Image 1: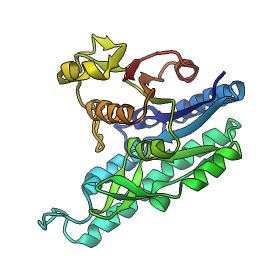
Image 2: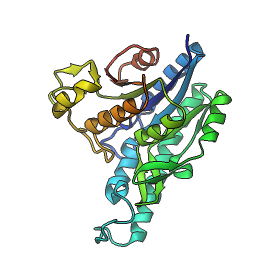
Image 3: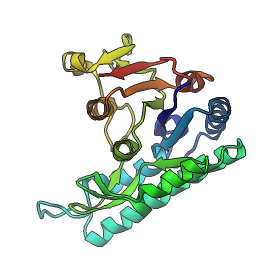
Length: 277
């Protein structure tokens, strides 16, 4: 089989209880790690980069401090929580919580026998208005050459325009795609896919082509839980922007609540909604 590069995101709603602050879903993480291990062992032609959301870890602190909006108010207005120092304190707290969840993810991967290594955006990425402009991609290339699984995640980052901000996993994927072009991007969460009638959830769209998206996007809703990086509509639009830049790229949005769905998606089956050019 031909070599393919896959970016896989485990959504924050999937690996944490998003309605209970700082609560990982450890049993789910273990199950997902075992599925990843099984597929990696059986598909030597697959290059995988794993990302995960922050769920009830990063989003809780991020909402309190408005970190994604920036540390420096570009309009010079008074921020509601007081001093700039307060906002940098929040920046550090979001970083700490993001790292805590990554520790749980790494623990389950290593216990499943997956040699994974984390690459935290806060330690290596600088952005401008939340677009990554600087990163040492060589370290991730070296990890892949050593047959290690690189793990990235939603995290804070220093930003040339905003002082500091939060980069979503999708923001990180967008940068990595410029240097390590993926064949497929898989976004695993708790929603079965993209609904034409959210929140009623009676009409699941199995495939959306770029040319059809503008006609149907009015029905795509946001997120049912707190999510400072935007809901489903934002994710779909971010992914179509990547599809436009990367010829042949497809994106699948699906649920991994049920055992085996992640395995099926990694092997190429459409178990949710497929986005294509």
